[in-house]
Image (cartoon, rainbow over all chains, first blue to last red; front, side, top):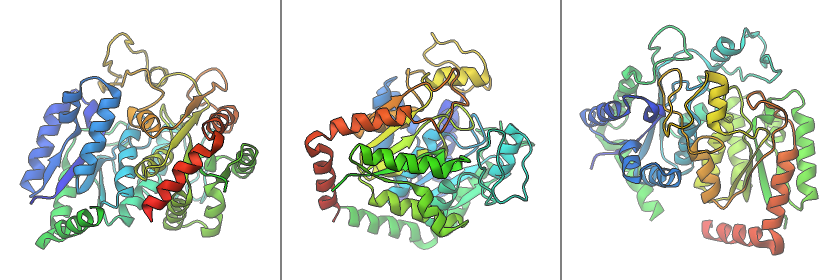
Length: 202
Length: 202
């Protein structure tokens, strides 16, 4: 049985959301996985916030692992809806994986939006006087460390110059993440882990 | 035994993080709760991202409920680290509660940062062509609906004009949330629920 991957991300807010979703599902299949894309469910439940929320939670519960589009969205960090789901799936004990269409660190992106920072300072402050995490990580440590501690993969491919406003729909980093996941799953390793998790939960 | 509240938020990035933490712990006590503030643990583990991550997860596992500072942080939405934790505690089946020092809706804040939006459109688009959720909610629906579905409380008190750049450290909305939680806990209702959850988990 193919491993089920929940495909999270601000992709659902794109004009071309449906075609991006179709492409992602097809790419999952090429790599031997079954993708679950939230927009399909959202269409069934219509324009009701409570219904969309529950449909997304149901899909996450069905999935074996998560793959999150962490490309910056309306600011220097990932989309908060996506990050909520990353926390949800991490708490379920499932491997969480991420990809991003922007390569620089969080610190670099904050500097891009809010002005220069002293990168030699272990705790530089932004223009509002708030500390900026300076661990050399891609985003907030809760996101990056959850991926690492869950045994997940994080891939980043800079889709064009500049990181804020990076294209949400590019799929090179997504493909790189699927390739890494297929390699990890050689011989069904991830399938076996997911299957024992399912037994443990039942 | 007092109910344990995990106190999440970008407060840890404030210059006055320690004094804000102390005030929050004291206010929790005034309302009959025990606060758990992540900075105390972070100090023990030092400047190590993996250690901070695990210490925060441990604190969340110890807590009965969560109280999240959802004041906008470096953009129109809440801090992503905070939202990760909200997803984590929601998945654990614990009541998640929020407060914010900014009253307007997410749509209003996106308009403030990225320019005017057609609010009569059920799916208005920002300047990048991305849909902006228009459910009249305070932030992304995953955040707001998780709070509602968990039986939690969300309080917002506009600390000053304008919502983006609202002061992170103001505590009026925090106090209002604690007051609402104390009311819900009249007769130990929340304690009883937390206690049966602990039994279920063991």
